[in-house]
Length: 341
Ligand SMILES: Nc1ncnc2c1ncn2[C@@H]1O[C@H](COP(=O)(O)OP(=O)(O)O)[C@@H](O)[C@H]1O
Ligand SMILES: [Mg+2]
Image (cartoon, rainbow, N blue to C red; front, side, top):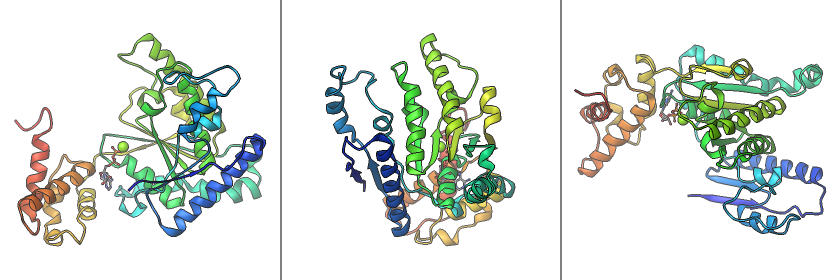
């Protein structure tokens, strides 16, 4: 179920700064309500809804905005209105990682907990006016990067704002950088953990297979990203596959955390978490044998469980068994290109 709450209560004549402050407080209050009630699937959008943008720009000084064109008229706040945060989807406990990686993750976001003491009371704001946490989760697909971003947000009790690189990229030169600026603005507005998915082309030095035009566009987005990062106050997490060539600027400005393929003991825990008690037969399976099936990532395990359960239900079975799961893993491996022969 998708439930949207739109708050459009701040009239034009309120000075921008005051309006900003109101919106930020309102958001905070609503997020607190969400955390408090445990409600999920609730999107709260404060500001100008997309519906009204066209009318608004139409009324503006320099004439009408044609739909489908780059919209230079959008203010930062209006542009940021397209990004809405939400409650995290996963708890930290659901995430399975080697102990050292888990520790690294937790210590990386300690800033959120300690900021008041260290930066306000001890006045380290004097040397760092914009304390922030910037992380890059890198590694093969399906190893829990997206899950970990949600888990961290949930751990610190903040909402999460997700955007993929494709969403901020724009075919209109100049719009991409503005979208990045708006994205960071929206995250701060909502006091949300910012998660930038599929950020490979944004963070890497090299571009391959692109035309001159898009190379230019990406470069200008990188420059904006640097500026936005410098001024960002909060937690930002990037997710990338294996990047060979990081842009120097980003290499040193964020903490890089590897998400590797799970080993046997991690696979065992991941299987365990993906077999709910309510799934008939799930408590009788042999976890050791399942864990011994190698070459699978967390997402494979999730898909195998779903596949096995659906097949059982479709075939009129009342429960799943070990063989169903093992077969599901085999099917999954066989279906991969370059495997199974
Ligand atoms: N380390 C992990 N611990 C627990 N579940 C995992 C893990 N990795 C993957 N999964 C399962 O696979 C799903 C997809 O993983 P995801 O976080 O989207 O991977 P990525 O973002 O690295 O491609 C998760 O929602 C979860 O069900
Ligand atoms: Mg992902």
